[in-house]
Length: 246
Ligand code: AP5
Picture 1 (cartoon, rainbow, N blue to C red):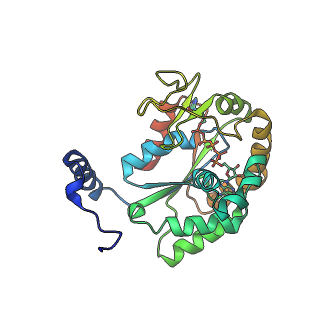
Picture 2: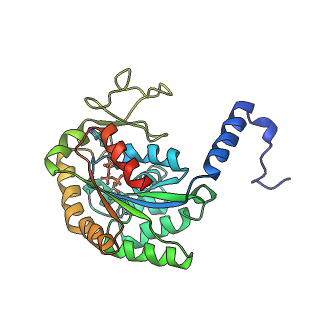
């Protein structure tokens, strides 16, 4: 029996091979980038990440998505994380640092990465910087999705998600073509368990108390760019592109 990592390329449709080949050619010229997206729940991190990921050929590591996948699969890590997540509290630093340490070594992160939802505490930021220092790299830019709390409730309670792809919709701001159904696959959309007004209050509280200091931590290193995250998605994308091309 061959190794489980051996792939028979003749089984892969030509169009997929060509698409991947063209992507690799386009990516070869892109500069490496190591980015952090920081902002409160609903500030648009998950909306902008896929756009940045495609533009710069980076991997997108969203600790919230990784933890939700672990909860759904009922892994030992997921069982530990579930209680804190349901209440809108943060899970332990050691748990998420371990997840990221492993993930950034993957080949898809070769050109760099977008960290979405990590680091969320100063301890996590310090551990991340230690990890990167060992690899001889560092964070290039921290995008601060600055926005007033008052705007977030409407964004969060109207959000619908296609769970397997991570595509997000909004009943008012980004509605799917058919209500409740993913535009690409036709599969049903779901709402996150913590996307209620009540749990949002705890999530915002955790953000202001534990995550805002992370912005100050990186501001001292001179790598923070502040965005106007209350603007419409396309305008936020334009701001991001300006910051990343400078
Ligand atoms: P996580 O999944 O990271 O959630 P979050 O930070 O609360 O962020 P969200 O995904 O809710 O917001 P977003 O900014 O991505 O918003 P989106 O773009 O979808 O974390 C969940 C939980 O996991 C945590 O509470 C914690 O328990 C745990 N956890 C995760 N990481 C951890 C860590 N490092 N340490 C410890 N615990 C951790 O936008 C929202 C909606 O608004 C969408 O519907 C979208 O269509 C719409 N929208 C987006 N942009 C705009 C715009 N510009 N104008 C109008 N509408 C917009």
